[in-house]
Image 1 (cartoon, rainbow, N blue to C red):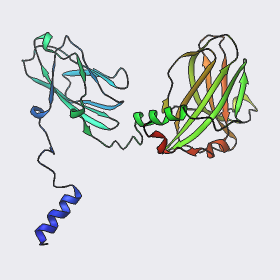
Image 2 (cartoon, rainbow, N blue to C red):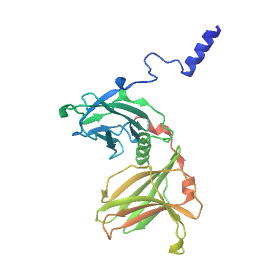
Image 3 (cartoon, rainbow, N blue to C red):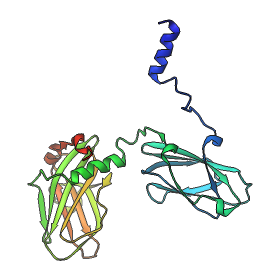
Image 4 (tube, rainbow, N blue to C red):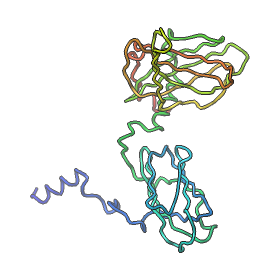
Length: 283
């Protein structure tokens, strides 16, 4: 092979010589275009949580009411038909998308509802995301459906029993599977589920140190149960000393409502099993 052929082969192997269909750069004229009007809110829906949004000018305002929704609207009217007001860039956990926002004076032409299509998604490796919410949910659901392997970690209160079923480790995360048995006839209306790192032995209340942990995922979002309840919470991996316990606490909505919590020792966390990806194969 001559020198030119060697260089060409190297560039192809490195992915530096793309096919004609792959665009290294685009102008706004080549982007997907959305028509907008100051009297209409344009709602863009992504298939997964949005991590970042950029609106290139201050002619358009926007917000993110929930994880996978972005709302946009021109600040004011008076623009010409077809004028480019801004470029909006939306970055999710696994892809990014850009739209050119074109002004229209005709309200009926303004886009009200836009779902990001597969062909509009440019694959993106987000360094801040080691596992997407979709993948995390798949792991959690399989764990939720798996049999309990832990039988000796439980607590009782208000004629209820809270049990630890499983702890699995996947990548940078702990998946904690727990259940509650309610032996009363009173429905439990969930106020919140909290995960904390607390002192194992409480001596003086003023010396108690509690660190609140924000779960990366709570699988089941239902807010009420009568007899049985099961859920999986996902937290980032951590280490903590033996005088601390990992606590999952569930409280009821009423002012005088019930509360029940489960303490998990570090030894139980250390014994977490690696979750086999084979369990994620389609049935």
